[in-house]
Picture 1 (cartoon, rainbow, N blue to C red):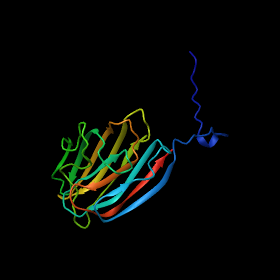
Picture 2 (picture 1 turned 120 degrees about the vertical axis):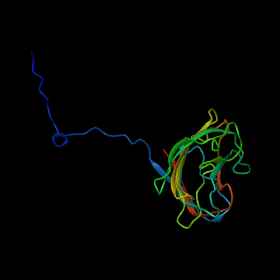
Picture 3 (picture 1 turned 90 degrees about the horizontal axis):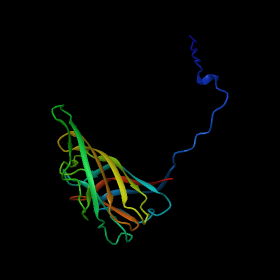
Picture 4 (picture 1 turned 90 degrees about the vertical axis):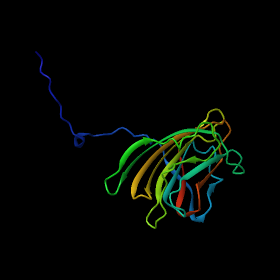
Length: 203
């Protein structure tokens, strides 16, 4: 019977490496800072330059307690934010006291062929105490395509008013073959008191 000899070669023994192709680069486009803002809109920078765009939300703080951050899309440069959407959402949460924890589907966050604003948090909104805020990201795929619907995926973590960490996952599609060229963010009630939203293109 033949013996199998194991050749235990380490990286230190290698004399050459193949090239690694970049999977995509992140390009900063613009950033907006909230200051008691009724809404924050991006009406430029979303075009055919990139097939994927990412919005990064940093410490978004509401003026009003227990409110939902939400968005809508536009095909006319921001004159109207009323694109039809279908989506799904779920969340996990855990309280500071360790007394409450759960994972569930969010019926009040999903849409079914609706032109309403897409919610990120649902009825279980972020608190407005001085140390309460929300951070996360939204990916928008190929918004300038005129053949397919426009998919989006979002993930947020926020400090709920009941002193717990809520992590929400939202995904859906804008059911239009028209190019998306603007987006609007607002709370379900009250102003965006503070925080930043940055827009990046992904090559």
